[in-house]
Amino acid sequence: MISPNPPIPNAYWVLPGQLLAGAYPGAQDEAVARDKLEKLGNAGISYFLNLTEPTELKPYHPFLHPAIVHHRLSIPDFSTPTPDHMTAILDALDAALAQGHTVYLHCWGGIGRTGTVVGCYLVRHGWDAAAALAQIARWRQNTPDGHRPSPETEAQQQMVLHWQEKSDHLPARGFDVQQPG
Image (cartoon, rainbow, N blue to C red; front, side, top):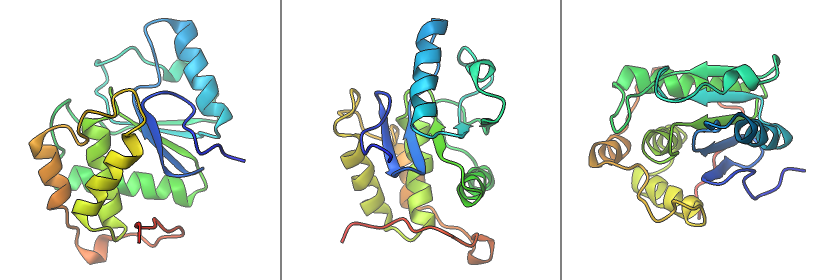
């Protein structure tokens, strides 16, 4: 059974047991990185969707079990992706979930880029954008950085508030992201 509590600090379940979002799971110290990755593995994470740039942080993927997927779709820190790049990120996320993976979506702090993707993901799956932003704040309220807004910048928040996709591009969904009643 998956714990409702996230396995590492600065992380939160978007879809319990399926999609966890948060901060960089590595560390400068190899033992600390391995400990975080072990905790994520024990939570069932089988797919890492990494939004950081290749030279931004010390790589953690060499410590992953060969069966675990590491997929990088970079967004520069404090920025927003192009609409096409966001669609590619959301498509990768939906595909991983449809394949049965438990996904860990992250950037460096788990706030700006991660919050932007989570917000657009919720909008893709039928949420009102303002409700999505409010829910992200609720999910994050008990994290160490929960006092900081997510998405972090005005441009990132605006991307979520104005996110739209062509309906012919939307993937079929085998799961449901419930909006609070």
